[in-house]
Image 1 (spheres, rainbow, N blue to C red):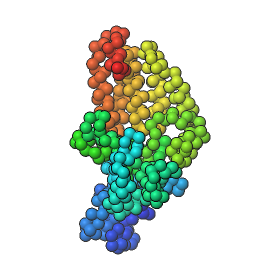
Image 2 (spheres, rainbow, N blue to C red):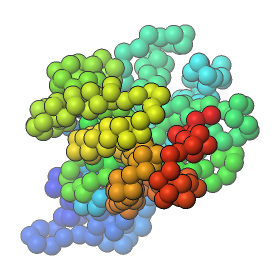
Image 3 (tube, rainbow, N blue to C red):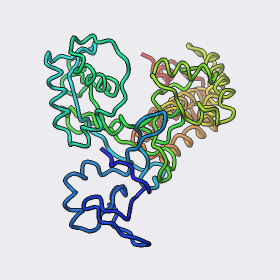
Image 4 (spheres, rainbow, N blue to C red):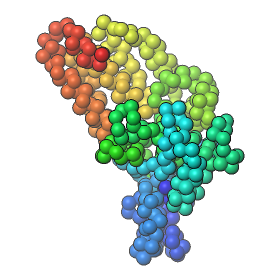
Length: 381
């Protein structure tokens, strides 16, 4: 769990351990890894390491008026930089209906909470919860503890066994649970590939998708589809509050970014014009080209939506035999992968590029695509 925010950002005049202070221009040592905590010397730093090691990330916890707890950058973070990796701190097995498999799941939950470091345990009880019906037949006090877990955990399927028999878990990643939402976020959470087949720890890494200044709030987008809540700001905010349980206070939802409603309306209209069973490749490529331009211009949502739009445009540009448009699309995709350093984006780019290369001869000849190529490019069964 990150260290708690102190004003000024890095209190270089007060030791975090012995509270020794210095005056004037004198400053104390700052942790070189996270830049979030200060010490008077190596002795205090070594004495605090067992506690601080778990908290050594370049962000700090603070309160935001009207939003509750959140994270701020303890140092300048560049676009593409790794902010931290996050492992689940609480894990409970569930079935497909999200019912807990262990009849004593509350005992397990409370034991896992008790095993957390003191600061992390304290942070758990400061998480935000939602009003939910008590369908678990537990006491009122237990349900207050359970609500925090339900509101901040997510369901994951592990890699053990075959695809049908793998276990499902509700897991809480405490650090990322502290990150507030923004429709135009500066960070993205990426699932890391499991190194071992039976590794049940679903780990994530948090990376910056924009340059983040010291003291700036770290934000994630809680949804993927930017069209999900419509284009009218008032209705978008109402729909988001109904579904996600809070008033979004990002610059877009505060009306501080001009042109968003107009661009979203165009995007929604273009999506409606797409043919679910297309044969006019040039027409579809033209529509997707405009969709990509608007998606990049809006700079909203998760980067995954940009990748989805780019992959669709590359498909139809290929089938339309539009060499310039296909090259432009793949160049944009590669540039995003390089700038963000997101492994998933690069991996998907490489996979997609190999798929297109299978039909390089047909593409270069300008011949009309045949069924085999169409099915492969569009991933039809």
